[in-house]
Length: 248
Image 1 (cartoon, rainbow, N blue to C red):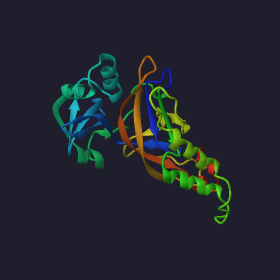
Image 2 (image 1 turned 180 degrees about the horizontal axis):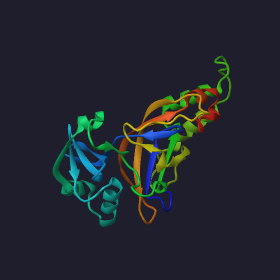
Image 3 (image 1 turned 135 degrees about the vertical axis):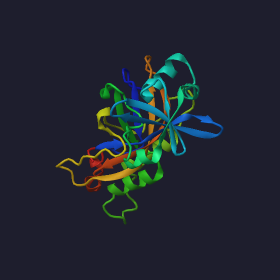
Image 4 (image 1 turned 60 degrees about the vertical axis):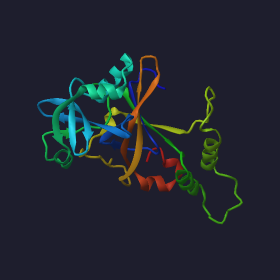
């Protein structure tokens, strides 16, 4: 993946001005159900991690960030689910007052680097599903009646992905459209403001799925989980020309 980078968040498509997401769905199962972690901050007690259980949040004991918890699991070989079960305390925080802003606690981004935002990379891929490809393809077409025109660059890239995007083991597959969004400083937690630059034409939200990875000391990526991402983008600029997708 990226040498020297400790955590990596990958959105499914398009560029954002900033990103907010609330809980991390970790990649282990307990009795058939996925488990969610949430990062919190208290004005006196500082950062904490909690396990989401319905309307209740159970604080974890030792680790103050998902990054530290995941790093410990990767370096020691302990299963992430086992580490969470061992760290779970009996201290409970009610989810609803926290989510509505009526708690001393506040919600942090689902995953970040707790001390060095520059060690968290946020990027995305596009043209990974049919709707995305069709929307992009339409941006190339000036006249809908031009049905005999050759396939557009966007649709060609999508077709490459369909044909070779899931390669067999040890085979290099077709790379998707990839773009860099920023480091961890662009991440926003629930309730934090999203900034619209003075030069922007628009500011609109768009739900996405973020894959969260940790890169170990050997450059090996480990998928930690997934989170809902609130993508904030300039859709007015985007509609002007498909080449404006990246800066939008």
